[in-house]
Amino acid sequence: MRKFHLFAALIAPALLPAQFHYPTDYFSSPLDIQIQLAGNFGELRENHFHTGIDITTHGVEGLSVKAAADGYVSRIKVGPWGYGNVLYITHPNGYVTVYGHLKQFNETITNYIGKEQMRTETFEAEVTLQPGEIVVKKGDVIAYSGNTGSSGGPHLHFEIRDAATEEAINPLLFGLPVSDKVPPTPVKIMICPADPDATINGKRSAQKFTLVKSGNNYVLNDSISIYGKVGFAIEGYDKEDLPNGKNGIYSIQLDKNKLEIYKHHIERMPFDKSRYINCFVDYKEYEISDQFYMRSFVLPNNQLPVYDSLVDDGYVRFSSDSVFSFTYTLADAFGNKTTAKFKVHSLKKAPVNAPAIVTKPFDVVLLWGAANSIEETAFRLESGAGAFYQNEELNFSVADDKDGHPSSVTFDSYIPIQSSCTLTWFAKTPEQAMINKTFLAMKDRDGKTSYVGGTWNDEGIHAEIKAFGTFFLMTDTTRPVAKPSNFDLKSTQDDLSSLKTLNFTMSDNLSGIASYHATIDGKWVLFQYEPKKKLIWYTFDDKCGKGKHELKLVVTDKCGNETTYIKSFNR
Ligand SMILES: [Zn+2]
Image 1 (cartoon, helix red, strand yellow):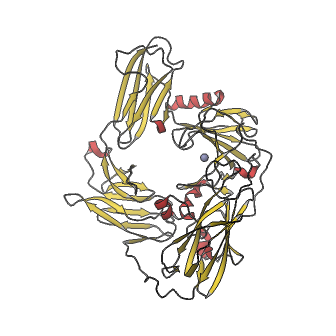
Image 2 (cartoon, helix red, strand yellow):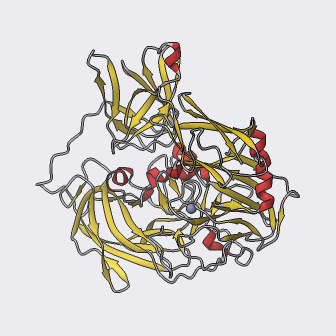
Image 3 (cartoon, protein in one colour):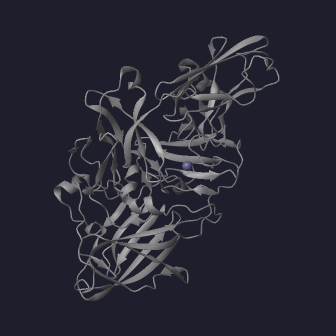
């Protein structure tokens, strides 16, 4: 079993307790249609594990969403990002069900959250409720399915959480009507050197091998010879009887000569641990190829509570003249299994023709177990302990402008960040009028520039960063724009009695939209926001009856640039 060092034991991944038991006849499906999964629990996503199941609604919105069991609405949230419109129901058996990306809520819930939106005069709103306030029975229509928030197409995101710990639990362990006799499919294996002197088929870099089908299982036909310490990783996916895309694998086990050296299964996920996916997979490989290779070894600061067994942290050292048999066993939540077998010829010494060990030059080392503070002429980078998954060698380069002043810093690495670092860019504080308009921006490896922000003091600008890239100052003095899309701002069109809604497309060139506020005749009205379509809209209600009215819309960007639109009209 795992060898514990005192320090490591304090932060090492907790080996799972014995399997929890979940009620399998308590929750019913939240939709009347057959459950077809566009995503499953534990599926690998950028910077997080998927914490629910995505039930496809086959391109349509507005399906009735039903309470999965008796309980009460304990939280309602409306917003343009994340889960969009989302509902939480707390059940008396200690679980909470979550329903995300909803088009709208039922009338009672709409009215409840509507009061909060009115109180704060914003579209985004969140409330927590007391047990007696909105009680629901199993099967009650609580909402209608949609595509709100960070959703790539119409579906229902459904979660089951432990009410006490707020961990998300795999909903497929609760007996939902999902038929699955299809085992996971392994695709490729990657073998990564874990020491500079390790060689894989004579090479000192990670090597990938494609698995081939053999009967119901998979094998590697490649001959593999290894010297030194390595770690294994595997890429693959899972499907159900009604396939709808490539979903995540529930459990992976690796045996060496029939001895289990590694096993994990994704049953529960605390939200504050989900970002550790960046060391669960090979981050660099994901950045380069968009593919998730799941490691069968753990880095020192891996705190995921998914591991069942680990021998030597999953690493294997080859230093004898012999052959080892390895078996990967991939399982889904229903117990369907596939194996992938391969053999490794272990070498006593590195091959004579192996390339020399190259120690690459680097600028600084980032420590995973301690705070870091790196100060250069142009910038300072600081982190608390635990910001990285292992000690990392970081390279950076500072570029100068035409006057020889530092203008940007590029952190040249594929190093993932677990918890924010503070980047201070030493620069002269801009004149008062420009302080709010000058911010740190980041260009990522794809060349995409995004707003980072930051606050100014005598030293320069300080900003929290969660990924490395190229950082530089930008200035946004351009006002955001909102354009009516179903009427005209000009006074020649003042009869809007035929319209059901007032629609604007809203955008900002640099820093992005921070807020908007709309009134009719001086009273706040609700404009909903769908950033995927850059659309805001007001649906005419009792706040705007027959007669003359004036609409005033104020849009503000993240640098405080503001635009005001006024429209007089008749109903
Ligand atoms: Zn989802």
